Image 1 (spheres, rainbow, N blue to C red):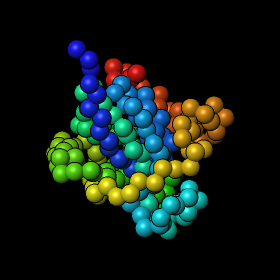
Image 2 (tube, helix red, strand yellow):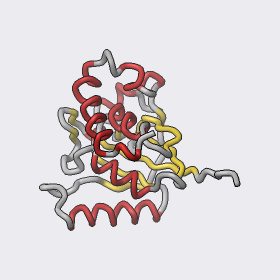
Image 3 (cartoon, helix red, strand yellow):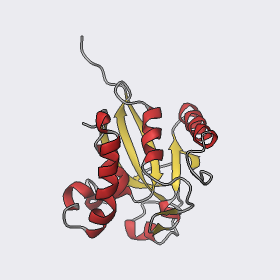
Image 4 (tube, rainbow, N blue to C red):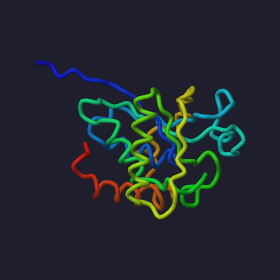
Length: 182
C-alpha cells in the first residue's frame, strides 16, 4: 500500500525567521519552510520595510508538513520550546513588532488547539511570566525575498548573527528533540 501524504500548513511568528526556519526545516515530516511576512497592512512588503516596524507585518514561517508524520500539536510544542512567548515584540536582542510571538491559524481546529496548548502551559506555570503570544486568523502570507530562503544553510558559517543566535538555538533544539529530526 502506498503511503499517502496528508499535507497541511502552519504559520508561526516567533522572532527572526532565520531561526525559526532552521528549527522547523530539520523536523521529520516537514516538507518545506518558507520565511515571510504576515499580519500587516502593506502589500508586497520588503524586508527593509518590515524592519521599520511600520508595515504591521511579523517575520514568520509557513511550515508545510505531512500530518501523518508530524501533527499540529507537536509543531506547537516546538514553537513554544524554541522562542520566548512571554516577551512582547521581542526575542532576545531583536526588538520590534515584526519579532512578535504570534500564531496565524488557518481554521477553528488550529485556533482551538493553540488556545488549549497555551492554557495548558499557563496552568503548568511553564514560564515565569504570562504568555503574550497572539492568535490571529491567517491573512495573506508574503514569501520573503530569495536571499532569506534557507538562510542558515547558505550563510550560517559566515554570518555573525547566525553564529551567535541561530546556531546555539538550533543546537539546543537538536539535543532536546533528536528523535524528531530528519
